[in-house]
Image (cartoon, rainbow, N blue to C red; front, side, top):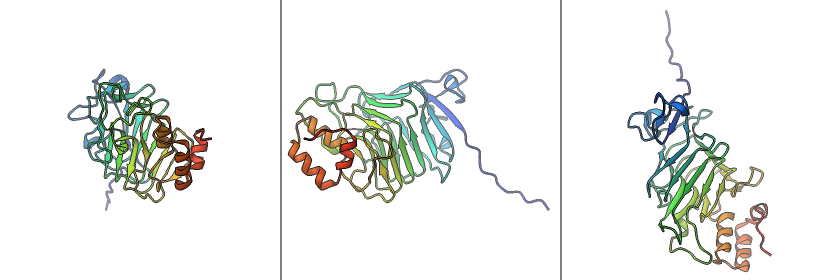
Length: 271
């Protein structure tokens, strides 16, 4: 008698670019699928299989308010699904989707999935190109949006210019709506080695997250804070820069939130 047992599917790498390239089979950047391809696109459920790596090649440009990548499946313990930025890859838009911590936010959006990794690689970039006080748009916007996505990791990204303020201007945009990297309502979220500029919030958004750590402002994992902070060192620095907080107010916030060590490591001067 022969017993047949199912074997787990092997992990597969797929490559994506703004438009199809070469043989259009997704085996390399030279043969990339178009990221919006109806059958093989980066947000199609068939590609979101545990262990798979979805590579971003070159520059992908979205329209204002768009989302480039939407998670469509779950990884598993030891076999996450990874979004990997190849060297020089970036996601650009006038402004990426806003309404922080909603299903429509972010250049990359994950809602209710698990075991997902975003790896910026050497120099992966997510950026807005025309959003801010003196720019063409004044819109709520989010770089990376993870809502209810447990056992996830976001690392090595540069999230730039979410909302570019001029000095002493609060932009008329709610602080909650200019988010660099947002993760909320989930446990075991690891955010580290990222650099974020011109964004009011980075991190948890006020939810408790057991086992979650984050290292804001491109810090290493030696300087992390727990998910139980609703305001980050980046937010504090941004508000000081724009004159919204005095140094006295800033020092009081640091004392109240326990962020002194993070601010120190972020080389922020407060005296």
